[in-house]
Amino acid sequence: MGLTESAMHDIKISVRDLNLYYGGKQALRNISLDMPPNRVTALIGPSGCGKSTFLRSLNRMNDLIGNVKINGKVMVDNVDVYDRKVDVVELRKRIGMIFQKSNPFPKSIFENVAYGPRINGLGDRKRLDEIVESTLKKAALWDEVKDELGKSAMALSGGQQQRLCIARALAVDPEVLLMDEPASALDPIATAKIEELIYEFKENYTIVIVTHNMQQAARVSDFTAFFYMGELIEIDETRKIFTSPEKKQTEDYVTGRFG
Amino acid sequence: MERHFERELDDLKRHLVEMGALVDRQLDDACEALFGGREDLARAVIDRDVEVDVMDNEIDKQCQNILALSQPVAVDLRLLISALQINNQLERVGDIAVNVAERTEALARSTTFLRTSRLQEMIQIARIMVRDSLDSFVSGSAAQAGRVIASDDVVDNLGRETFRTIVRSMQEDNAKIEPGAVMLILIHHVERLADHATNIAEGVIFLVEAKLVKHNPGVL
Figure 1 (cartoon, one colour):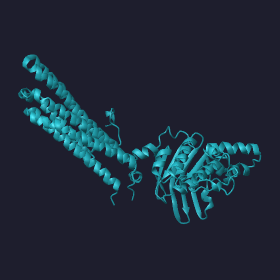
Figure 2 (figure 1 turned 180 degrees about the vertical axis):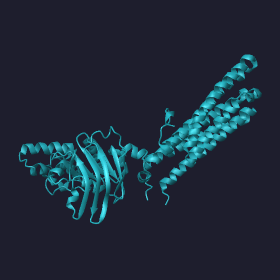
Figure 3 (figure 1 turned 60 degrees about the vertical axis):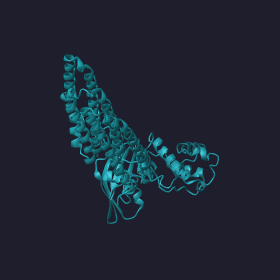
Figure 4 (figure 1 turned 120 degrees about the horizontal axis):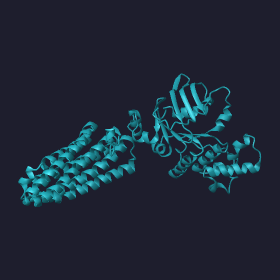
């Protein structure tokens, strides 16, 4: 796979021979890769290459789509997430997801963040207040909204809404964050804030991010995986992918000479 | 369809080759001036150095613009890094042409002594190294660049030998002390010329094979 022994000493997510079919169409072909904890792994590749499908397979979001067949293994902390004994709700708590389009609930800012802890049975208002404040601080949104927590989340700007969605994902204390083009609908300043968050989050979370923005992958990630037509072509340290990738296909893609 | 970005890279390469041709001509004229005792030609080399400096700045600027506006990666990034390095080395080759030309006057009456020393042979090898390093850049040949790097030792050895021969001539004939001292300085310049060719060749290997051979000849 090209990753150095030392970099892969600890493994948070390990995928082996993963195949995924949408009906008769195979979307992922024999994907095997490892992702270390507390690192950012970027998934890049042209539209339809399978990177988002792969991302969604890590917390079983593809289960929600009908007619999907999956074989192979996705291990998180050595537990197969596709094992029948796995509680999918619990799994998605541990492996949170942030989408391209921010999707706050049509509720107040406070309720958006408190939603997860509440459905997990937390009713203590003081404790909820603490969680809302600390998570909004982690998502770098607290200073902007602290005086209007009762305001509708829908009234926030696009960038603020996306950070609110990040706070909502953090409120249930996940270990892994999956991000599917989290900044593609944002302006450069809002994008920079999200990228800064990703950088800071490394300390506490393992992050997998799908991005079409090559420079964003280069800026925020430690490892980059290049997908093409459902196959993993190459995964390596990001600095290697962007200076001297092993495979010609990877080089053609990152330099924009693809196709 | 060729992209605008690729045209910019081609333009940068063309510019570097022009810079290479200009400094090669400078070296050619400087050598002819030195060994032929032609002070007029030496003057022309010194005056033309401003053209080398202008082109040096233009190429630097071109690299800065591409880096800032296109944010190249992988082989394109390596091309930009190599281009900056090669351009810098070529500018210094141009300076050496001036250094050589500047010694013409002092050696105008000692051309026989100059021709019988092995300095001419040394300059020839160093100049071939400069040309070959540029050829390896144009053709993208890491093998040719590797041969340039290997030639550096030949020039260094020849430099030591020439140094000893000139010192012996100076010891034997007082009249050779003054031109001999100038020739010893020239040996140093020619050794530097070979070093610049070596640095260019290292840049080519980095560009083609993504290997850093600078200070690390074991990689070759």
